[in-house]
Structure formats: structure tokens, C-alpha cells
Length: 379
Image (tube, rainbow, N blue to C red; front, top):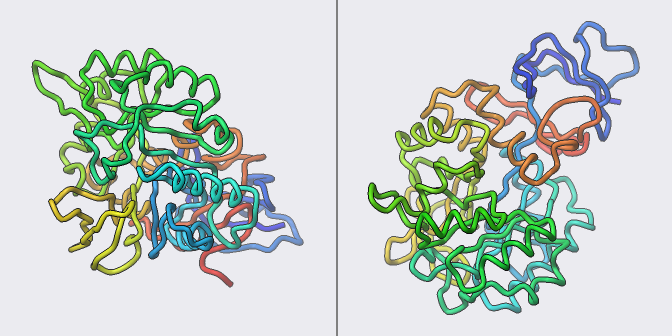
């Protein structure tokens, strides 16, 4: 049995000091740090913050690897590198490609969920982004492979798909959304040219999530509220890429005032150049140039990001002034709730998975545990 003491413990109820956390694979007890019994392997947290591990719902790649890679090492290497950024669980995210390539990715994700990814973050399932999107707001998706929603095609993969993006104005989208929701999949509206009314119809069909708010969707206009207007006004969860490139700092502050911290979730939308230097890369078969940390197609379209989750948290806190105990929810409590994992992940309490991150006031990650095992830095 292990324990961590001398920490600022970040829980759903706020920050608590002079606490000790006792754990093995799960958190067993929270007690006063001077009341830790004998026989424990005790780590001194040095006065740093200890929170639940970060959950990234939307990430395409990092460290030179991509979810669509046919290389069997890709998911394992992503999992191994993400723990250095505080991420202890994630949804590998696909992109629009040939059906066979998407099927292969889904099978690899299923195998990785059941297997051992080594000392890395846990794979929770797949975020299927594309191919059921609108060509006008395709972003860095290859328009040759965009198709209408296809329920029959995805039925064999429902146990793997946890989150899916749909343009609600697509042919057959509303019936598709209803079927996906009934199957337990979280439906997100995005890469869409929907009107405000079409977005509302998608939400009434069961969609509860919005893919990277502002990016790749019909904008807010005072006579045409569009997808952004519906996302801001309706009680749905909104993803935000807080790299200060995709969404300006002032707009991040505005979104917080509109949605509140309960309905926002920070994502990275990272691609394979994340954690690497500038240079030439690819995303979904499309050429990407990364310069000054910005990933763009040759026409200037943003192609994912090179953001890491601990920097997203630091940026959002700096931009909005949200307190530590509130901003951390955007990468812990909220994604756990969205995936219906709140009884296992997203908080520090007895019985929860011992996915823990120790970080300083600038969100530099000092130590990461997954299921009670130290995975960063490796001993």
C-alpha cells in the first residue's frame, strides 16, 4: 500500500491541505498526513497539488504517432508519452479516411483496451471524428471520404465507440443520432454548417456534446446564431482547445461566462507533432506544416494542435482567472461525467481509480500514477 502526503489535495469539494492519500490500484483512504499508519510506502509531495489524472477526450496523436497509423506500436507509444503531461486516460480519435482504414483503427483500439499498454495512460475507447461531417467545414479532413451517417456500418463497433461527431444537417443524421444515443454512445455536433434550428433538432435527437467549439462550424451572427449560438445557449457540453491559437484568450473568458465551468471540457486535439519539434508531418493522409507550434495545411487551415493537457489548463486559468479547484474539473470531473465514469475517475475519493497527478502552480507535471502505479517519471 502506498501513500502521498504534504500535498494540496484537489477534490470536487475544493482544495484540502495536510491530507494524506492511501492507495493501491484504487484510493483506499484520505486521512490527516500525520495519521498515516506504519507499513506504507510514503511519498512526500513537496507541497505540490495532487489531483485526479487528466482525461483527454479528443486526441489524434503525439510523439510522432497517430491513431490512424497501421503501426501496432502507435497507441502504446501515445499512451506512454501522455503520462508526462498528466493524462492518465484518453480517447484515441480517428479522422476521415477510407472505411477500411477507420475499421482497422477501431480494431486496434479495441485490442489496446483489452491488452496491456505498459506504463502509460489508459485507453477508454474511440472518439470517431468523421466521416459524417459537412464538406464546407471539413477542416483537416479529406473530403473524398466524407459520407452520410451509416448506422449499419458502425454497429459491429459500438462497444469501442464512446464519442462520435455528426453534422446534424446531414441526410439521415437525426435518426442516426437517436440510434447512437440509445446504444450508449455520446453524440457530438461538429464540423457542421448547421443553422441554429438544425443544431437544436440534433440536440433534441439526443446529442449532448459539441466538438471543439468555434472551430469547424457555422459562426455566431446576430441574425443567424448558427452552430456557435446553439452551443452557447443550450445545456450541452462544449470542447475547447485552449492553445490560444484555435480560440483567442478573450473568447475563452467569454465562453466561461456563458457556459460556466460545469459545461466545458478542455481537449488537446493534438496530432503527431505534439511533443516534437516544428517540421513537416501528416494528418489523415494530408500534408501538415508545423511552425512555431501551429499545425496547418498548405492552405493555412489549422490541422489539429501540438497542445498538451497541462498547458491547456495553465492557459485557461491564466486567461480566465478560474481558481485551481475549478479549472482542474475541465480535465477531470467533466470528462469523467461525459463518459459516465464519475464513479471511477475524475475525482480523488475512496473507491476511485488511483489515477493521480502531482503538479505545481504552473501545471508542470511532477509525478503521474495510473491505477496506483507510478508511470512518470519512471523509476
